[in-house]
Length: 320
Image 1 (cartoon, rainbow, N blue to C red):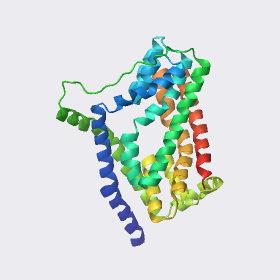
Image 2 (image 1 turned 90 degrees about the vertical axis):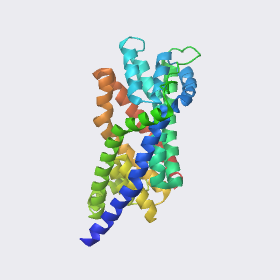
Image 3 (image 1 turned 45 degrees about the vertical axis):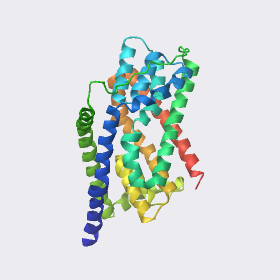
Image 4 (image 1 turned 120 degrees about the vertical axis):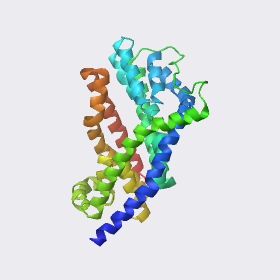
């Protein structure tokens, strides 16, 4: 039993002393930056996509809003749809086109404060680069679909909207708002990370992953990945942060390479997409756009994401 408790305790110490503080610092810091209007400075990035994708100004405003809040962006688009300003086809294309901009909002809140400390500069940077590539290509697909199926929008593109910080608020007041706004996210993320990490840690310490990964190894071997990466794939299906933590531990042990780790995370994302579709994407899109259109939006986004991720995996494995 000592042989099990020792590694288990060591990993939990790492979680509490090295992982949790970075998550807290990253989420709180990111919310403060958002309060100071950092994401508003990125709004100009959406103009070319809106112009060439034939999107309306309303869809452009939605895409810009996704930089700050996915919920706010989808709620805005749903409102435009209910008012008859945008049609079903434009709703689907807007959601696909907005992928890259929704992803940008996660870079300062998740990828920089969580992924880089856990995976290191090289592996973490490689993983972030591939995620940026995937999100960007999905957005390009949306632009192409808009160019083919939508009428041309005015050359000016969409309206630029953003929350920013009003001139009446003091800096300390903004910082305090950022900290307060971080609390619900911190509770949700920390609870999930600690719970899933503890379960995964226990499974690893008891060698129970040997049984689970036995069924995943044939799939990872198809991609030319070593058996150790199977643990990353399995945990990735349950929770992305915990899978990145497991990947970081494997890297630290020297049992896998950075490319193997990134490949395992991407392959794991293929499996988790199906779970995410049933658990989150489909219910959320139905809530915003109704059963018929919501189902279309979720499925089209799922298919495009799956295809582009497979292409990214193929490109990555060409370096093996």
